[in-house]
Image (cartoon, rainbow, N blue to C red):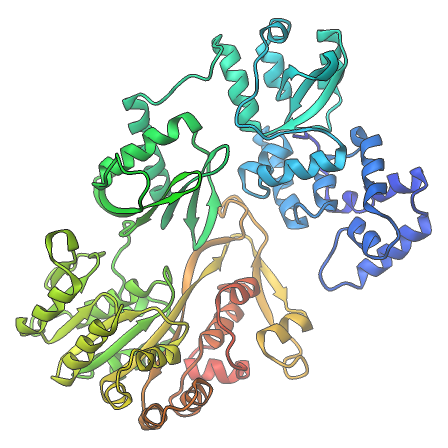
Length: 625
């Protein structure tokens, strides 16, 4: 892609000026659109505003772009077509100016600012070029004998036969004039520009350099083993929680879930995919001959002297088998409950009013990947001493803690959840840990164990703390049993932490304040943080995650509301008014105000079920300044 590094300011009127020179719009139209843009709370590209005002049409823009494509810079075009944002472009330019030596387009793709799969079809449509979306390019020996691979590589292009004796030059960047001009001299015939993905062009050039007429096969045993090991090691080194290997129509996409968000990685060659799937199946103990049914498995992987446990799911799709590997113990250290990220007042209540209580059920709730297991193990570690017998039933064991009896469920050998829970109370435990309440039987077991004087810790998949209580009711557990056994519900989420190296203040607009649930007249000013992107965070603006909590300690008012089967709204109101409950949203706002996370993360992640209380009250309730 292009070598230019346009700034957002330069990009503002570049295409609009071309439209003026073409006569599609007037200079007065541009000045009016600029005045409109200045009044917008959220910046918009100038072309988008001109279109919304009805001053220019899509076909006019396409006509001008096609006539002036060599005068338009790639960053400008992507920005004005709303394919990237201003911060994305600024971050890419900063990377380029750091001396990377790479084209701007390469930087945008490699740092996941744009998805080449989505951008190229749009560029092709706007510029009027054909888009070659196949996974490989046809090779014509007559054409390739007339051009050197070094020339192809320097311009990132590859010639294929076109219609009516023309040459179709597949390019990654259509805005460079040199490749087409030089190609017409080389081939002595008309050259038409086409667009193709960078990796497809690279593969075709590599085959030409090797003098092969077909793509080389790389599915030898050593290559496959090395590729799988590289994939796993890279994911673990980058702190990924999940690895997604997804077959698509013409490629196999690999994505890592990092800090709770899927991030695109390098694709797997199509001719290598089946061998890689078979290799992972062998490692996970799955049936390599079965491709029509879903399967599960587990594998242990040695990484830098540590054995890591990965849970593997094979899911049959119309394009082949999709694999998701969950990294269960990504070399994480067991956290003390004081290190979980709770506010000082909240962690004090967790210790004194929940964990130090001799019996009862403690529920840790939240969606998959919200850090429930880390909180659960922090509580177990707090309770673990020589005077306490702790026994667990987990699927699977994610942290090994000395001094407690841990059981990992294995249905293949008959160690099922049901069988384990029947035997667990016969082991004379003080504390019982049930990995997850997943059905009526496990819920009944937890309730009955609490009734007989045991402390029970378990996890649950619900939206918030009140949702945990209501879901037990919906499992047909009697309300009086819930109210007499459940001591506390801890709800939580993980939100991305603003990168401390590039954080800057972000004063919320009145619209953003309203979206949080405040009235703008009540909160005239609220300042959070926002990362602008740097090398430390790979220009994402975030680095790591923090937990946001909601701790409900049941009192008599909440128990009575449960027994009377009042609505979730009423139970939530009673909880906030009488138990000192700080909601997930309120805890998130408090942490955002402290510069730990951003407005965007709160909106993306946290449920907004009730109006938050004033900031001063929230800070007082949580013991923070």
